[in-house]
Amino acid sequence: MNELLKRIAINPEVMVGKPVIRGTRITVELIMRELANGWTIADFLDAYPHLIEEDIRAACAYAAASLADDKILIDAE
Image (tube, rainbow, N blue to C red; front, top):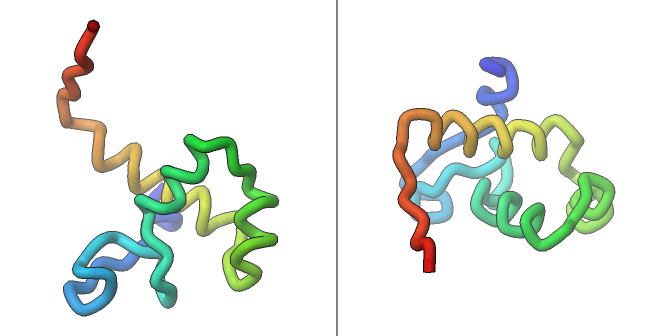
C-alpha cells in the first residue's frame, strides 16, 4: 500500500491542499465520489486518459488510510 500512497500528493498550492493524484488536479475526493456514483475504473480511464488503474487504487488506499483511525457516526434515522 505504501507504493500506492506515493501516487498521492498534497500541496497547498494545488486544489487548496486537497489530496490529488500526483501530477494532476484530480482529487481523491472526486475519485471517491464518482466511485460511489457507480463509475468503474474503465470510466475513469476513458474520462481521464492520463490516469492509470494504480491512480484509482491509490485514491482508495488513501481514503482507507485516512479513515482507519477515525470514528464516523452515522445518523440512524
